[in-house]
Length: 183
Ligand SMILES: CC(C)(COP(=O)(O)OP(=O)(O)OC[C@H]1O[C@@H](n2cnc3c(N)ncnc32)[C@H](O)[C@@H]1OP(=O)(O)O)[C@@H](O)C(=O)NCCC(=O)NCCS
Image (tube, rainbow, N blue to C red; front, side, top):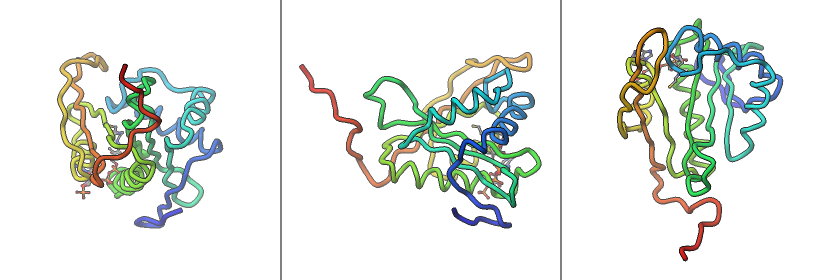
C-alpha cells in the first residue's frame, strides 16, 4: 500500500471493494460522458468485472480511512492475442474527491504497474471535453493517437472520443505471450 497526499492510500482492489467501485462508476455513468455505458453496473456485474482482471491486468483502489474514494484499472484491450502487449487504462474518482490529486496518484501507480507487467502500449479513450482526464493523461506521457468522430451518443448528443497512447519508455518490450510463427 502506498500513501499519497492527505492520507490517501492506494492498494490492489479486492472483491470487498466491488460495491464502492460500482457506486463510483455508476455515478459517472449517470452524470458524465467519461464512460459510454448508459446503464448502471450491478454488483454481480462488478464482481465479474473484477474476476476478469487477473494478472497482468490490474485494479487499484484509493482509500481514505475505510472509504474507497477512487479506482483505476488496466484492462484487456482485445481478445486477439497479438494485442496482448497492449492494454487500456481507466480511472474514476468519487465526485466529492475530485481535484485533490487522487486521480494523479492512481494513474502514477497504474503506469508503474503496467510497465512492471511488461505492457508495451497503454491506451486511454477519453471523451471530447473531459479536460481533467485529457490533462491528466497528457501530463503522464500519453499522446493523442487520433480522435474518433461522433462515435458516442449520450445525453442527447454525439460525442467525439480521443484515443491516447503511452508507449513503455523503457523501450521495446518482449511480446507476450509467445509470438505466432509466420507461415
Ligand atoms: C478524470 C479524473 C479521474 C481525474 O481525477 P482527479 O482526482 O479529479 O484529478 P487530480 O486532482 O489528480 O488532477 C490531475 C490533474 O488534472 C488537473 N485537473 C483536474 N481537474 C481539471 C479540470 N476540470 N480541467 C483541467 N485540468 C484539471 C489537475 O490540475 C491535475 O493537473 P497537474 O497534475 O498538472 O497538477 C476525475 O476527475 C474523474 O473521476 N472524472 C470522472 C471520470 C473520468 O472522467 N474518468 C476518466 C475516464 S477517461
